[in-house]
Image (cartoon, rainbow, N blue to C red):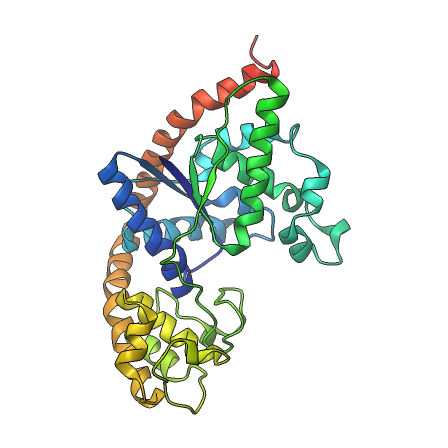
Length: 335
């Protein structure tokens, strides 16, 4: 089993990133290391080029996000951690696969429609072909499984389509069709200001999210001011239906404490949010404080973080190179 996943280098990570993805990556890396599998996690700096960027910001955020992943538990002794741009096989294979992917497939991608909006003529070509590079990210390593959320399922389906069509067109059995890996433990964390919207670093209100770099007082203040309703917590999870903000805070508590949501409801049934929010704040500070402390330590030596990425990239390139050579040979590029 070989797992590949990436995250864009577009700024500070927040609680939703940690609970919804990174925490699952750490658990997965530990399990695969024990079972003899492999996990590769990368910072998608090439994908970041599809939007407006400031070069210095992109370089800084790549280091800072790498440090955050390391602080959160990604272990280079168990996983391969690298940034995409250091492994040329991603770009080279993406170009080859653009001959396999079809315009119709890309036109149907909902992320393209959402991000381009009405200004499709003004959007970058990279934004349109983004899913082909994403397919190359996965197929270069012959990944068997890819951790995905609901918003990435369509991109994985495209990667599977590309793999199958390439194999069929060129009469090879080069690319396995990667399977989605959906963790039942991965919660969908919503905004602290709107329980119907996903927690996001693009939200203009910093009060909508808990950043992994927030200090203890800021975390406690944001949770104290988080939107709720006046009703106490019920004695069943099902009874929270229709109470989006309340469900979100219970979900966050359960994910931080590694408890089923019903256990949290049982613990706080009948209590109002005046009692629940301080308990949640204490838990969040206890879990996130050590991550922030380790992150601060790592950012004190950015050259060491960059060196770790370089070591990971060398390992990743060694894994991807045979696949790239086979793809080149399949299409006639190696004489």
